Image (cartoon, rainbow, N blue to C red):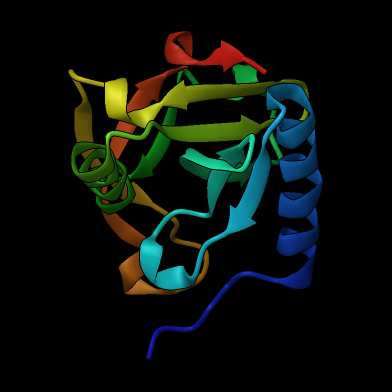
Length: 139
């Protein structure tokens, strides 16, 4: 079985960022079980309204020209949209900014091999998509 790298610090940061999104979007986030592959579903006025993947980064938004996310997570988001018709969002908090992009709306994507190499876990390196920072809307 693959180890879980999510720490209490990660969960605390995710909760804090989630509260910001709830306040800005006037919605309620509900944590999804791990098998869903995305972090939260959203409800507005007690009605289901979408899916969200949250990311907290320790670098500034300007550090990179693109944001990478695993191809498998992207495909999961696209499938959720195709199946349910509800939007799928990637929300990112950098050290100096916050933004979001609708994963289900991304069409032309660049796929490369990438990921983490600092944990000595061969499953951390995989096909990833590169999302231009221009696609992110300010939160």
